[in-house]
Amino acid sequence: MITLENIKKVFRTKEVETHALSGISLTVDKGEFVSIMGPSGCGKSTLLNIIGTLDTPTEGKVVINNSEVSAMTDKQLAIFRNLTLGFIFQSFHLIPALNVLDNVELPLLYRKGVSAKENRRRAEESLEKVGLSHRMKHFPTQLSGGQCQRVAIARALVGAPSILLADEPTGNLDSKMGDEIITLLTEINSAGTTIVMVTHDSRMAEHTNRTIHLIDGQIL
Amino acid sequence: MLKRINQYLQPAWYNIRQNRMYAFFALASSALTFVFIALVLQLMYIYGSDYRPMNNADRIFRLESFETVKGRYYYGIPSAEVGDFLEGLKDLECVSLYHKNMLNIDVNGQLFQNEAGFVNSGFWEMYGFDFIYGKPFTVEDMLNQKQVVVVTESIAQSFFRTKDAVGKRIAFQGREYAVAGVVKDISSFASPTDVCAVWVPHIFNRFIPNRTYRYLVDVFLPPAMSMDEGKAKISTAVKHFFKKKDIDIAITPQKLHTRKEVSVSNAGGALFKYGGATALLLLLVIPALNILLLNIANSSSQAEEIAVRRTFGATRISAFSRSMTENLLLVVSGSLIGLTLASPVINAAQQFLAQGTFINVSMIPRIDFFVILSGVLPSIVVFSLLSGSLPAYLISRSNMAQILKGGSK
Image (cartoon, rainbow over all chains, first blue to last red; front, top):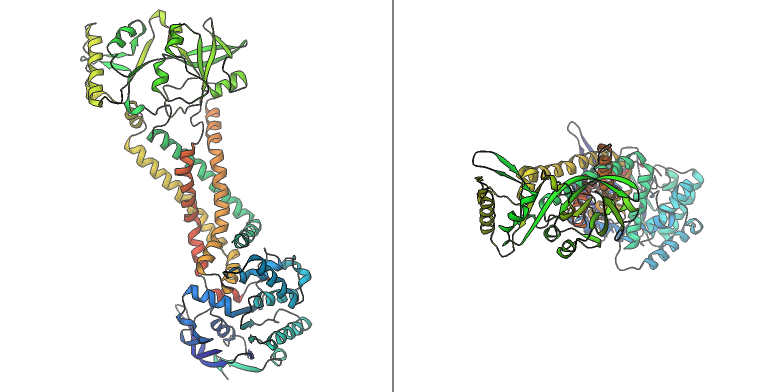
């Protein structure tokens, strides 16, 4: 499902060259729930961004669902992200001007051939799955952190992606809310969605099938 | 599609409300810019096109002053000799007489001081005034000694509190006149020498008997007549008229210029064209650069949202469009405000400058629809692109991963 071959990422400024990833190769199978752990600055988020096509590697090959993503154009990548990937961020990144339902519906707006009514139905269904159907008309600023993350999960799931990428999804939440979110992610994984999650918290990593440890841009 | 537009408009409106100072500056500077842009474009239109009432100006010659071979000047044609002078021009399409003077006009016992033009019926055939009510006075009216006048719409409004003043009565120089027609206000830029509040048949001109006053004669060439032929006829007629009085006029066809040529030359000729274009360019570029710099400084408020959109499937082009929406909302609204204010602003300025004088005509009575359609609207598009496209481009190309690394709820 996800294959990384010798991925290197170097950040360059005029004076400094930082090797964030130094030859990472890994495979994530369909339906797996993989966590990536490691100290700050070890390259976890960079790796996740490269898998999510939000960033490009300096060297190496990324193959997702048998497609090599580095060969794709901007438009192809946009479609690919829309259809295949779902993203959850530590800071939720909801659009404050839009209400919960509109936030969740966002990925569907970039799909063609689906009616507005159907989009709305799917967004409502997705919110129901995360238990927030009673907060549809609320705005992000009116929700708690846990609720915001649930909305973010609903937004990530609404397009039925085969892969969910979560960057410290419990990082901004207290332990109770963190537990709720990890339980929700486990349920989503049980339904067949592949999940790659970056976390600092070993307690959260325990819920996953496999943990990859990164140190200084390399797999331990 | 509607949903997508709404999804663009809502966050744009939210960001505008969040950044009120920026929004105010963008709105105000766009409005101010388009007050001036609309005025420059309207002025260029007035001078550079067949602007009414000067729509025939490229075939009209005004015979105003005549230089003798000895370098002496004669201004106009003495009133008593006008008939004789016109005899020499009778082959030509249309000839109008023109004499302007200040009158005390009595409207229901209230006195208004205004400039009046004494003209013949040919004046209305030659110049393309827009009659909004009534009609001009005709040859028959003049033969029948009908005491009628034509007024401008703003004068009708100020005299009678209504623009439909046909049949209403005014008095001056001991006679009472009925309003026969009301014309749209004309721009004093279009025909500065012709701007009057009231036009009166020249047969009622009571300034004439003392012979001090002289008429200007306008000649309109027939469509079939070549300019060379027309000029030759005019110069021959002028020479012949003065020769009878033993005066040698140094007129040649080459020295004759149409009213259009004179108007363009008075406005600066080629310099006016290039100056106008340069002014327009500067008016577009300088405020656009200001807004552009503000946009770049303000782009962080959009960056996160746009990165999120791209993460979930927006292409760079749609990210660019989303980013442009905010700028478009502000710039287009500001521009439309400026366009609406252009004419009132210039007329208010004119009123202020003309305090204590008798000037009551508009420099620019309105911004013409043609100018709006062919000049102002394209300028709004150019202005929006100039001020918004670079920041939108930069945002659409920015590194999503880096933007989404930080961020907040």
